[in-house]
Amino acid sequence: MILPGIPKDEPKRLDALLAYSILDTMPEPEYDDITYLASQICGTPISLISLVDDKRQWFKSHHGLDATETPRELAFCAHAINDKNNIFIVADSREDERFYDNPLVTDNPHVIFYAGIPLVNREGYALGTLCVIDNEPKFLNEFQLKALTALSNQIISLFELRKITSELQIKAFEAEAQNKVLEKFAGTAAHDIKSPLATIVMIANHIENQYSKNLGADGLKYIKMINTSADSLIHIIDGILNYSQNTKVLSEDKQQLNVWSLVRDIIKLVDPKRLVEFGYGFENHISIYTNKVALEQIFLNLLVNAIKYNDKKECRITIAMTDHGDFVMFNVIDNGPGIKREDQDRVLEIFETASLTDKSGDKGTGIGLATVKSLVEGLGGTIRLTSEIGLGTNFEFTIRK
Image 1 (spheres, rainbow, N blue to C red):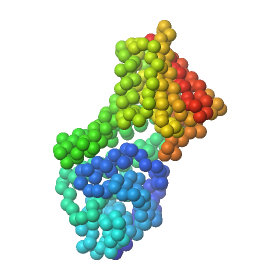
Image 2 (image 1 turned 135 degrees about the vertical axis):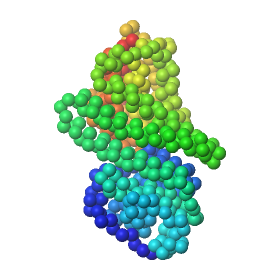
Image 3 (image 1 turned 60 degrees about the horizontal axis):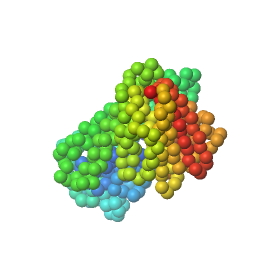
Image 4 (image 1 turned 90 degrees about the horizontal axis):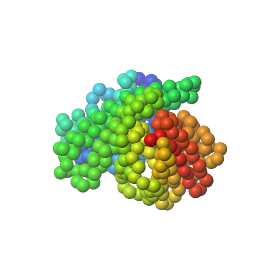
């Protein structure tokens, strides 16, 4: 076995990697979707997003492999980052003097075939790889290599978005005008999110068109879920970018909406597997004249939070609506852990969070509920919450008709 060399720019490379604050973070679906697609495209059982620090390769996403990291001296990816301008391919590691006696080859996971695309950031530092692995010799065609390269570009876009988001959050704490900070965040984030989303939609459509016979029912279902989620996010991003500038636009750009239809569509998006028990307290099927994108975003944030932070075996959410003349009042009531009384007045302010974490340990950014408050007020309404620890939370808001 030949140990991997150390890149000439190693100190700066490591600084660049650490600047993303991504090592040892929890799994995230946008990265897992990419490794799933990489395996499907290349027909390999394993695909990894591997980041190489000074002692190990750590996997931000590991499709088809239980391990979360391996020593750097054993890592194929540690070889790949030394040639950041080319795809690193090992057709049969058993016949390669660098790897034939590597424990990752002789023992599980039996890495026989390896193809790694270096993840090179905008400053030119190779942070790691997007790689596909098989336990038998393999060959990738031109389409597969181009698709892997496209996916690797989207990983870098996600990394850059992560850094931008973090930097914007820090700046937001220092800013005097909170509404200007939110507008800047929305504009910057929307620009950086839409590009990788559009590419993912394009690749997913191509896979569905060209490889539908090989994907099977489950594969096609996941491709359609990716498309639906990405399209919905692009739609919401476009709307929020256009309407978050000021409340004047929110009040002027309206359409007649059937609230029942809107709520039903949002529920399909946030609970595609129908794991949540929804109750409806509609007085009647009221039609209101308001901004659709804003109302969608309000419900999306409230329902996602109610599901994400629910700590009960059975998640239950009730959505009620009553007509109050010039206003419609909505209630979104969950059976979650509740919010402490001392947190209730501040959780609707930007970057303020309650002492809650979801199942993955995420505490949230404090942006979602602040956005809800801004949009409700932009639609001429008000919002408040009541909550009891252990019994759940009731978000009550009004929308001018």
